[in-house]
Length: 454
Image (cartoon, rainbow, N blue to C red; front, side, top):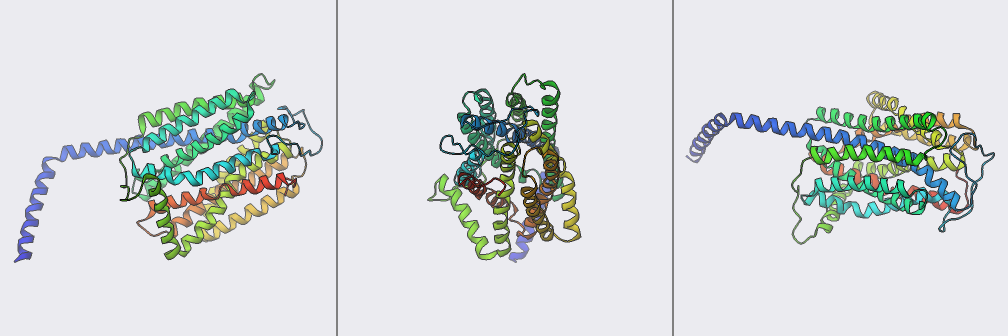
């Protein structure tokens, strides 16, 4: 009799539900349209944000880094090279002078090391604020604004106060990391359809890639044609462009396109906002260590691989500027080639993954990286070897385009279903946790007087 009563109640509920759906069909459709419009706005916001980040990364990594190295060597009393190709320096002269207790060649890697250490401790707190409060949008907008303002101030004081500009580089990198956490929090909520998500991520990658390439092409044209006589400083031009692009793209995205979000989780009883973030990482990490050996070793690999590839640009810029005596324009050409050859690298990743499997694809890519970098250290041993440097930049570009799709595909393949969002957060944490290690090793070797070729 209880079963019959439950069936009657269920039928009555269905009738009421049908009546409710019939009477509110138009509002429901309107609500779905509003939700779809909201998602489309946030997809556009993500696209603009990715393009701005691409411009900011290239402006900072190529032109600001080169200028900071030049100013540091100048302050240390080392012979430096100008912006023109005619100012050739014969032979390799690694400067042994010191400024503020360090060699100029250690400057960039020390900056990356400080940012990496700071981020490793602070990112759990940032993630906790995003997860447990209503301030996700505020974190994204404030970090974007801070990034743009720091870039502007750095440009204005670079020539007269280079050391303060170097400190601002730490703040710029940290603001970028915080901003990345906030904008990535929107990604899983754009769609639950895997195919649609692939389309979105491809669109966002293309936007960031397009922003980087477009910025470098514009800068090469400006430096080669418009500013050939050096009327304006390279850093002044590049950072002016970066500031304008970031202000417009970030401003529109975070003012008009991204929507506020409520807290996704409640702070556990007995915990604070600070402890909740660390506790979440601890519990997830313990589960992986105890029950998911494949994920554990994959994350160990990711921690070292991402630390190396993230630091690669900084070390490469230092090596090309101080060891190979490259100008900012030559550095820009090398990085542009690296980006352009990233596209065939992605196709190679797709082919090798489908032909073999993600594990073999990732292994082959890492072997390519090791062999190429070792060969470059043997061949690029003196200035005036721009052609060879450009060749290696192409190979490294293929590696960059190859490594990220293979790595992410392998990780997504082995994680349990239903825990993608949580474990992607752990993946991002693994990508950052050792980012301080390669620059620390590089700086120690430089301070000990070892050659940058090693």
